[in-house]
Every structure is written in C-alpha cells, then in structure tokens.
Length: 416
Image 1 (cartoon, rainbow, N blue to C red):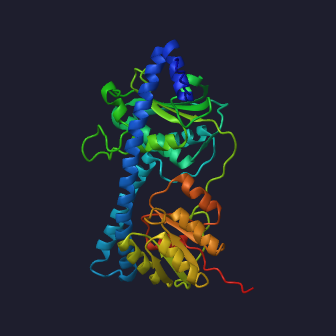
Image 2 (tube, helix red, strand yellow; image 1 turned 45 degrees about the horizontal axis):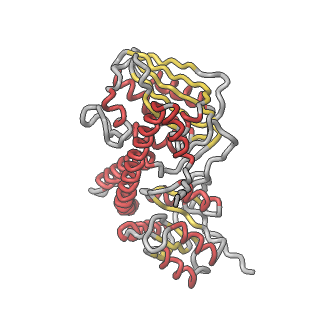
Image 3 (tube, rainbow, N blue to C red; image 1 turned 30 degrees about the vertical axis):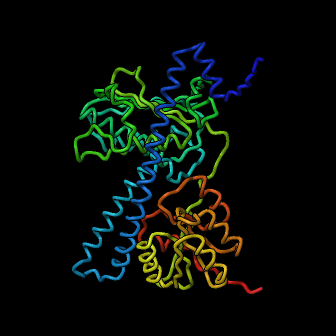
C-alpha cells in the first residue's frame, strides 16, 4: 500500500527551495542573513533585559537622590555630592537608552520624514564641529521619497556613523553622504523579515578611512564591541543604530564592494501614509504651583523605587497610595476609585502587568488619568494605551522636576 504524505510548505520554505535550485548563491546569502538576524535578536533580548534591570536600579537611586536634593539647602555639605549622584544616574540612563534602542524597546516617535533634511542637519553640525581637514560632501536625490521615521533617532544614527568615520580618519579625509530611491527585487527584500515593501530610501555614508576588516564586520553592531582604545567609546553607537533602523523596518549593513574606506548603507521603506508622532509626557506642558493636592495610586513592583517615588510625590504635596503589582492595585482601586485622582503605572510587573492593569482600572472608572512610568517599553504595547486615554509616558529613571512636569493637574470631580 502506498502512503501519500501531504506536505505544506511555508512561504519561506518555498522561497528557499526556489532559490536553492535557481540561485544557490542566493540561498547561501539568505541563510547567512537569517543566522545573523537570529544572533542579533538574541543579543537584543539580552540587552533589553539588562536595560530593564539597570533602569530599575537607576530609577531607585535617582528617586532617593532627587528627594534629598529637594530637601537640602544649597549650602548643605552633601549638596554637591547629591548632585553628582543625579548626574551619574543621568549618564547611566543614556547607556540604558542605548541598550533599549539596540533591543528595539525604546519608544520611537514616527512622523513623515524627508531624509534629505536630516542629512543637511547632520552636515551643518559636523561642518561646525569636526576638524577642518575633513570634508563633508553630500549627494542628495532631489526627488527623494518620504519615509516613516523618528527624525531625532535617525539623526543620531547618522551622527554616530559619521563621528566613527571622523575618529577613523583622524584629521584628514572625506565623508560622503548620499541619498537615493531604490527598488529591490523580492529575493533582496526576503531576508528583511519585517518588511513587505520593495521600495526604499537608501542612505549611504562613505569615508576614506582605513576600512573595517572583514573578520570583525559582523561584530560592529553588537553592544559593547568597539575597536577604539579603552575609555574612548562605549561600543553602543552602532548597536543603537542597528536597533533603531530595525525598528524602522529597514536594514543597515557595511558595503563590502566599497574599497576606498568604509561604507555604511541604510535602507528604510518609503512611507505609505502620514503618521503622527505618538503623544507622550512632553507633548502637554503646564505650570504647577509649589504644592499640589490630590491622591495618587503608585503601582510598581520595585520596593526601593516605590518607597523613594512615594517620598518625591509627597514632597510635591500629594497623598500617595502604593501597590506592588497590578492585581493588588485593581483590588485597591475597586474600593477607592472615587478617592484616587491620578494613577502612576509601571509596565513590567509580576502577577499582573501594566497593560492588563491599565484596562482593568479603566473598566472600573474610565476617566481616571493614568501616567505610564517605565524604563522598558515595547512600542506596540504602549501605543494603544496612550491612544486609549493615558495622560502620557515618562521614562525611568526620572527626577522630581521631570515627574512634576509629567503629572497632569488633578481633575475636578463633577457630581452627577
């Protein structure tokens, strides 16, 4: 008896089968792309977890130091020491933001962007700041299409790459930034698992430096990998660039065909429609008096942060109730929802996470203002929360002033 086995192939398997027969070299390239992508994804998960834990530690330290700073007179013998602690926390925060960018878990404010404008900004800044022996040249496509991007983060990516080129060239050399529209074939797009478009804006940054050896080219995007002398770099610049471009559903790579130095090639899909920036805590600015009133429910699983943040909020004049997870918060809120004016909510918690907690609270009282306070964000995980009525987002770690500016005025309850 013959046994007929029906095999259902996925689209990726079908493509792999076709390319292996017709273009074996393409199949080999795709396998390498997949292997590299999986490696970077694993590193991203590790980096994101490290950033989350580090942010919680920094947030606790900064909250305590910020409360001390607010209570100390300027002539206190420890006043300068406390400010040093706050500054150190802010520097540490920049490192964790770099890790989150690499892990693609840092919030991105997308907008309709003309990449030529960003290139011109970078050119202006570099021309004013780098050695006069280095020339900045641009070749910009006048008909360049728009992309959906965060202009600040894309600017940072280009600046990081250009400054690396400056370091590599020393006091003499040429940096050329070129933009153009490109259309890739389906086989070229396929390794980009997150992209469905074939039309891209390409940004190339070329330098006349010594180049990057082939044996370390794949490592340059890994966090903390650096060829610079000890103390001259964190090794996060290109890791941040990699994470940022991946979050834009694009690719960044080194062009091996470029032999005059180093060439980084960035490809980002053209925009299919305008998208406004996601609202955050900085969108609405308002003035506060020195002392505030009202009751805040603070939800966070980190004991030290919860204690120190409560101290900050009480310093601002609020009454504070605390919960160490979402389940505890929902139980408390269900009995006191008329007495709670604002909720400050962490996103990553045991028992019940921030997202589920947000919607549970809104079921009990739909008008309650909720401020998301977290050091670890998945864009899609907070996007709907912000659109559903959250008053904003503040990233950990934060100080007293930042928290004060992010909190909304206590709403006046209208009796029915």
